[in-house]
Amino acid sequence: MAGATLKDIAREANVSIASASRAINGLDNVADDVKQRVLEIAKRLRYVPHGGARSLVMSRTNTVGVLLPDIYGEFFAEIIRGIDVAARARGLHLLVSGSHGNPDEALGIMRAMGGRVDGLLVMSPFVDSHDLATVLPLNLPVVTIVSHIGAGQGGISIDNFGGGVTAARHLREQGCQRPAIISGPSHNFEARERQSGFLSICEGAALFEGDFTEESGYRGAKALLAGPERPDGIFAANDMMAVGCLLALREAGVKVPEDMAVIGFDDIPIARFTSPPLTTLRVGVFDLGRRGLEMLVAALEAGAPAPAEGVIVAPELVRRESTRPNSG
Image (cartoon, rainbow, N blue to C red):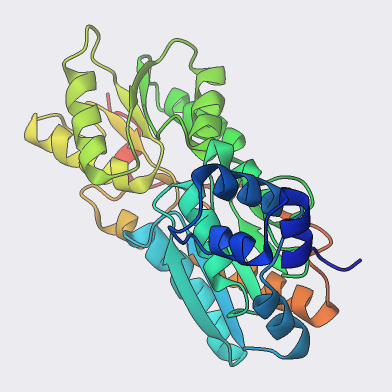
C-alpha cells in the first residue's frame, strides 16, 4: 500500500500543498493552528517526505542511522563500538545522533534522517517512547535496542525486572539485612523495571532516585548513609552510579564489602577497575550494539520493515570483590 503524499496531507488539512510543506519543514511563515493540524495529520498517516521515500526505493545509501538517548558515557560508547565494528565488517557507514531523552527531539531526528539512511537503530528507553511507533516510516527498516516502543518493532530488550530480582537475591545471599537501591530516573522504563524487580524481593528497602550518572550515585550513597537506618548493601541500577557510590562510601570511611556490599548493572569496562572491582549484572553492552546492527542488516536483505522476532537478554551475575561475603 502506497504511503501518504504531501498532497494527501494538504487535502485532509484543507490547506495548500505549499502551506503543508512549510508546516512539515518547521518554517515560521505558517499559522500555529495550521502547523499543528498538518503535523497531527502527517503523524496519523505516517507520512514520509517524498524525497526520502524516493531515495529509499531507488537506491541504497550504505548508511545506517543510530538514534541513542545520549552519546556521552561508557555505556553508550560501548553500544556505538559494537554497532561500528559490525557495520565496518559490512562496508556500512553510521549516522549517529542523541535525543537527550526527549521523544520530540527523537522524532525530529528520525525525520531528518529520512532519505539519508537505509535503516534505523533506535534506543529510546523512556516510558513515553511507545508514541514513536506511530511515526516510524512504514518503508524504513527499524531495529530497537532496549527501547519501550510499540508492538511490531523487532529488536533487542533486556530482562530488567529479572536483573533487579537477581541483584536483590545476591545481596540477601551476602547476608545483607538492610538493602537499599539507587534507582534510575522514574521516566525511564528500564529503571522502573529494575527497581520493581529489586523491591519485589526487598520490599520496603530504602530508595534514592538517581539519573544514571556518577554524580547521582555519589549523592545517593551520601543520602542513604545519612538516612534513619544505614544500609548494609546497595544496588546501584547502573554501573556509572555504582562508581559514584563507591567514591562516596570511601570518603565516608565505609569499607566495601566488609561494611557494605555494592552491586551495579551493565558491566561496562570500568567495572573491573573500580576499587574494589564491582560486582554487577552483565548485559553484554558491546554485543547489544553488534547484534542490533546484524538484525537490521538481515531485515534490509529480506526487504522487511523489522526482524520477525525480537531478542531478550537475561542479565548475568558477575561476582567481584564489592560483594564478597563478610568475614567473621
